[in-house]
Structure formats: structure tokens, C-alpha cells
Image 1 (spheres, rainbow, N blue to C red):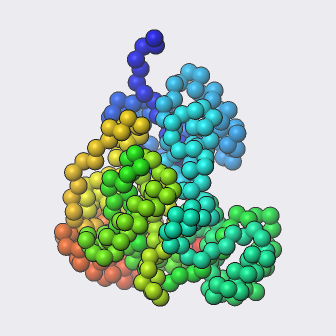
Image 2 (image 1 turned 45 degrees about the vertical axis):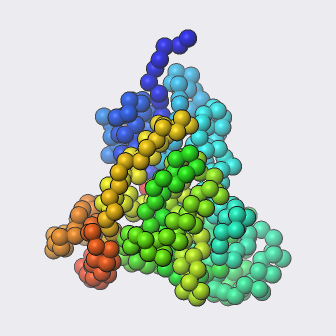
Image 3 (image 1 turned 90 degrees about the horizontal axis):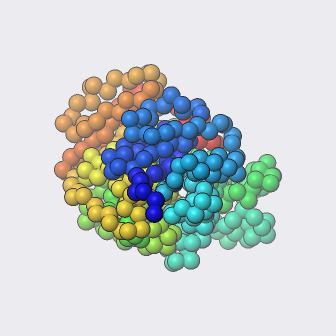
Length: 400
């Protein structure tokens, strides 16, 4: 029999994130190997928690990554492979299937990366989604445009957040865009634009069960903020109608999409027209824009840390959620004209954390009062727009 050895996790990310995940794995006695992009060689990685680090050249293809990691596996016994960013999920799933390592495979991964796949799966399980059509068969698209009133949104199937989304007001405006996309058009879907308030549910999932969920609402829909504005989000009142409804819908969604263990960031829209909730998208990752820090401020639960603990518990099902607080928190964040904006004049007692990032202004707020945070955020957002806000053109591609 081989001697007992420490378990090893390979963390894959081409963006600078997940430091607390790696630290927790190391605290739990695991060996931690990081596979990241060459451009992030000097990033702020938790090097004291890393047993080895490997760097990928730009534009490397997945088959070449499979060859490289298979070579690594000759001398490093890999027990888990985890993608810390959404854009690395396909790589991680491909590696798991090739090396036969436990975790999410390619089919399930599609439900969390491909907006068309997740909508079709949700619809099949009787979850409400905006009317949509795949951008594949042109006769189907013509029928859709004739029977589903506009406006519509054209969405990349495998981008995150509001990246690459285009609003279409008239049917005649769509066809030139599809012509321009050419062979890439099947990588998009067309969906009815539903005006409403956008919510997100950030969950921890252990053995197919949602063991923790935090329900929040964006101040403005992310699509609006992506085109220039101040980003805000905040915890909604626990036990409210929206909180209860979204917790129930989220449980059904996680079960429908097949997440066995890990974390999920799901978005829903509360339609102004009929007051119903519609599923928008779900990712098997920690939400960006300091949502993890907001959740921790309100509940004491760090999503990165708990994700690591769930991966370590694995199929044995030995994970237990630590006690959680029931307070409220919010985030305000914007691009800033200043390289290092000064937020010291924002000095209400609810200011819990000041975000330090070049050319960004940001705060995290915390309060036991569910009404205090949204009121403060609304006031702060007006001040941020005057004192800090810088605007950049909408992105068609993500940046590190």
C-alpha cells in the first residue's frame, strides 16, 4: 500500500482572485498548486500557501493545457481540480474528465457557462425565464420576432455579467448585426428585454443541498451600470416576500442545474409588468464586484473559504456550515477619475470597509437595520457620480 500523503488541489485561474480559497486549503493541510496566466506572475498571490505555481502563456489552447497538466500529474498526484474563475471552468472540467478526477464534468459545466443551455434546462424544469430563441435557425428567429414583442437583447452565450450584450429595438436592426457576426452568431441567443429590478442569490451548496443563501438586490441592473454608472448592491430584508420567493426559486434552480457541491451566484429579474421573478443566469463561482466581502460583512460567512472546505470534504459529505449572523450589508463601487480616490469624507458608522484599488472608489457598508443600507447607498451613489465617476466604453471582452 502507498504511504499516506497530503491531498493536492490544482487551482486554475486566469484572473487574480481566489486567494482565500487557497489559504483555506493550505490551513486544512492540503498541498496547493496554482495554474495561472503568465501575465499574472507578479500578482498578489498567497505565496505562503502555495506549494508550486505554473504559468500559462497567452492564447494557449485547452488541448495543450491537458498535455501540460497530464505531464504534471506524472509527479504530482492531483485529488481535486478547481476553476476559481468562470472563464476557466471548461478547462477544469476537461481536465477532470481526462484524468478522471471527481468534480463537475463538461455536461453539467455547460449549465453554468452557456446562457442558452441554462435557460433550456430551467425551462424544462418549469422555472420562469424571459422568452428566448437560439440564434441558429433563421426561420425560428423570424417567427420569434413576429410573436414576441420587442425590445430584445442579444447575448453572448458564454460571457459573464453584461459583457457583449446588445439591446435591439427593431427587428430590422438585428439582421445586420447577425450578418456581421457571421459564423459566430450561433454563439449568441436572443431574449426578450424584461424591465425590472435585478436580484442575486449567493449560495453554498453541499451534496445537492443549498445550505446557505444570501439574497441581494442591485441598485441598478448590471447592464445599465456596465454602460457607465455607479454599481451598488445590498442585502434585502430577510423574511420579506422577495427574500422568501427567491430562496425557494434558487433551491429549485440549483437542483435543476445539477450543482453537487460548491458555490453559486444566480441572478433573477423582478418584472415591473407582472411582478413575477424570471431567471437570468447562474454561475458556479463566487460573485465579483466585492460581493463576497459584502456577504461576509452581513453574515460572517466567507464564500471562498467555505467553498474550499466543501471541496476538501468532497463526496464524504462531512461539510458543516459555521454559524452565520443575520445583519445587512451593501457595496458601492465605481471607476474613478483619480488614481487613488479619497473616500475619507464618507464617515457614517455603517462604513465597514474601504476598497483600495487603482482608479476605483468603493465602500462596503454594514448595519443591523435592513432599511439603513439602501438609503445610504442611494445618497452615496449621487455623491460618487459627482466626486469620482469615470466612464469607459462598454466592453465586448473581459479584462483581467
